[in-house]
Image (cartoon, rainbow, N blue to C red; front, side, top):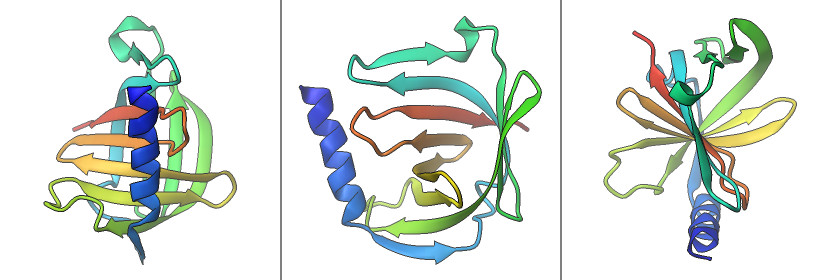
Length: 133
């Protein structure tokens, strides 16, 4: 029940934020390596070191989102980003809404070299990535 309330709070606060279209933030451009996926009604986590799958995300300066699984391109979409202001009062984490032209949207939380992508739905899945240097 507690997890459901947290998910609802995130969704409600998300829709209360001001959304400003921005070009792709230079801070999210780059290559990202998958660390974990957590969520669902049972709130379970899968970690990269517990599976043979290697997942990589590439975000380009020309607004292309590329998702690779075991070096095979699985997803290749154009996207737009919107900076969410008022989401975090201390601005310690950069927060964006990413809208894919063909499939929907997700929230991005960037904290230094850690990128979290949240699906924004009630089951509350999130994917954590670390920057590939």
